[in-house]
Length: 290
Image (cartoon, rainbow, N blue to C red; front, side, top):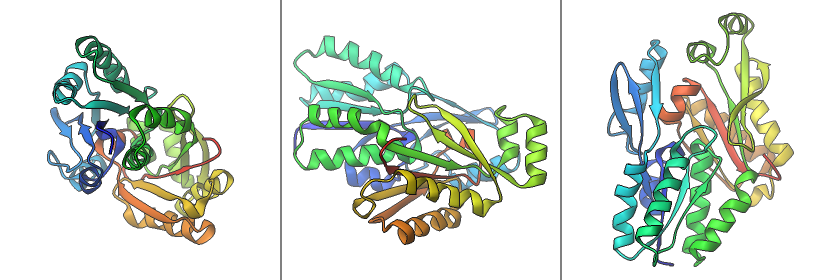
């Protein structure tokens, strides 16, 4: 395998087991809840994920902060000193300044270590969408692809990585300022569920609404049917905000309807969950377009 390291951040929502299996380095973003700040590591060492969502359901709010330039330099520089090249796959610039921090750090380190190769990619992805891109990049690395080849593949394919999200908690969206109190009240009365999508600029945008939880989960699979390429060859990823059974409804339906090769599940971490609330299910796959 080529001698370079793949680095990402905790917004990718990969499990600790997956991180270990892939051999990637994950920089933690941070979240603040009840005036205390925690680092978001894949093993959830700072706070169990169930505890995080319990607090959200009780009405607690969480805010998040990006990986900064110093954090990147502290992690990347020892790799360069050890003679390794580095590829960073960073959280969407449409949702965080994490990528911008990585770009500044990479520029500084290139000047200091001109003999080394170091690149960063703005994945324009989030949660296990970012995780799926990292997973695919590692597969290419293990197949012998060079750093430049993996970087170019990520740039060429990131806008084919589809993100479709069913949100359940209107009250949380209201508290976060994403919908009005009136919209939340009426939506709650009518059992309206928003559908969110990550667009080509890497922003989370509202794209639809349906009545009822079951309909919102079906909507995700319907959208997959419009876009997915070679489903029988694909491993799809699904993340969830402490609602694994609902996530499995989506995964099993995707298997039944499209024969996808396999499904990987994991929690939506605090960084994304702080903005979408509990009960969210997010579906990620490769398609013709986002």
